[in-house]
Length: 143
Ligand SMILES: [Zn+2]
Ligand SMILES: [Zn+2]
Picture (cartoon, rainbow, N blue to C red):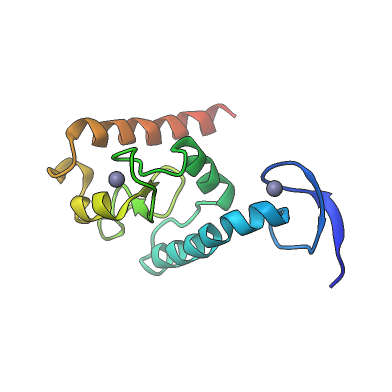
């Protein structure tokens, strides 16, 4: 396959490179390749459970950017896992309004519980994340 010119679908800059499915420049491709793989895995998990599996890489990138690559709960440690706010086993899908970045510590503190049942993460952090996810819904409805 030859190199081709185009505009990166994420950062918007012109680049010349090998074509890839999402048309990302090499910089973005390298930065987000792990995201891409993890997203595919999480979408498959939701799909297998018969749940919504509609989160796109672009949406996930926007969420990561919003939290500056940090955990959505503690806002301190770098994120290490995609967290389902409503767990898959409780019917939450892999969707833009249910997935957030979490560090391993907060992820295990949440214990796969429904947000209302979580006691080991401060209530205000749970509520803040809830508000964030709600705000995404509103934004999508407007545009
Ligand atoms: Zn790019
Ligand atoms: Zn955390």
